[in-house]
Each structure stands twice: as structure tokens, then as C-alpha cells.
Image 1 (cartoon, rainbow, N blue to C red):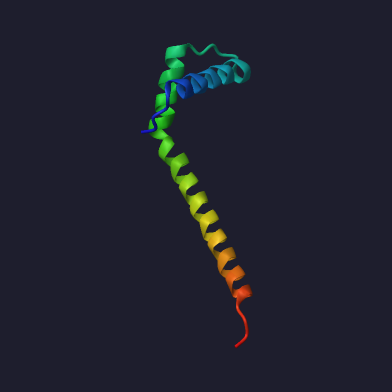
Image 2: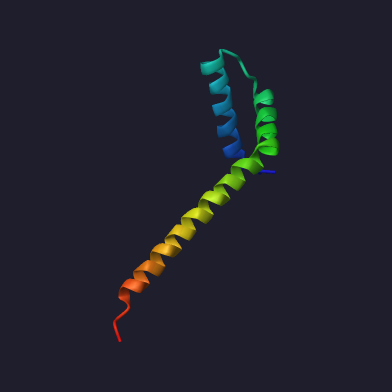
Amino acid sequence: QIEFSKEERAAATAKLRAYFRDELDQDLGQLPAEMLLDFIGRELGAAFYNRGVTDAQQLVRQKAEDIVEALYGLERAP
């Protein structure tokens, strides 16, 4: 489960409430917004986290390949 600081939680629920108000023309109270945030974190959080890990792995892999190529470029002929 994703744990947010008090400030992060307040910002996230404010964004949820604004989205519901602006895009769905629905008034979402503070408690329902907190419950929705908990649901998203519990049910979808792992998918977002795993995607971030996968993206980070791909970035590190690419950077490692770049370093290997750069090192080959430094080799001198015997």
C-alpha cells in the first residue's frame, strides 16, 4: 500500500475533488475523496509502481549500454 504524508494526501484529495467538480460536475466530499484515494492506492497503486520500476530499468539498461559503447570508443589499437 502506498503511504502519503499528510501534505501529499491533502494535495491528492484536493486534486480528486477538483477533477470531480470540473470534469464530472459532481461534488466530492473530503471523506469520499480520501476513500477514493485509498482505493486507488490499494487497487491500482502496484500497477503504477511496477510501471515506474520497469521504466527505470529500461533507462538504466540504456545508460549502461551507452557507457559500454563509450568505453569501446576509448580503446586503443595494440
